[in-house]
Image (cartoon, rainbow, N blue to C red; front, side, top):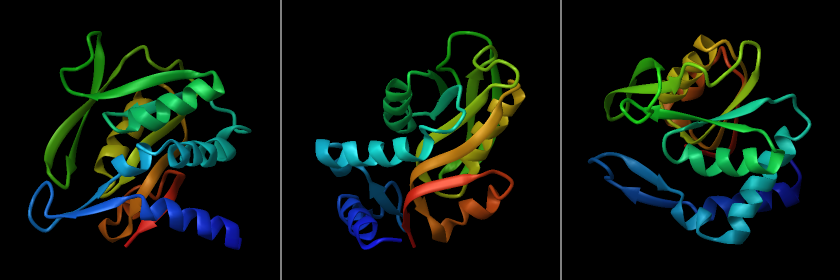
Length: 180
């Protein structure tokens, strides 16, 4: 890794605020709002994602509810490709597939419209944070159930101590920033 890249990543990390005991005691919450609230840093994040994905064969980008919408929507716009919302149960109006998963906060269900992906389409999934991997795994299963091929799971942040990458080892994974 070049010095310039290391310096850039260090600057990005400094914009992520750490909040202890949120949303519950014992959790170190990584708050991305200072980073995305600064246009220069948000643009830098999107440039890093663009550099990684602009030459790849990607038909659509799937966004995980809710902060994944921030990055996936911006990148889909830049690349001129479709955006697929993967939402919590009860939020999508048409026929859906569902995938239940356990997160660090409890059991939840994600949904995707049944017609969101055409068979064989190459789909990138983006989200803000990779923690335990439960949410990302549920999203990947939904894309596959629709007939799509997963290009990669991309994240702004990976929380290494929660071992989500190990849980998702069958999928290609990329994260811009890593925290212990």
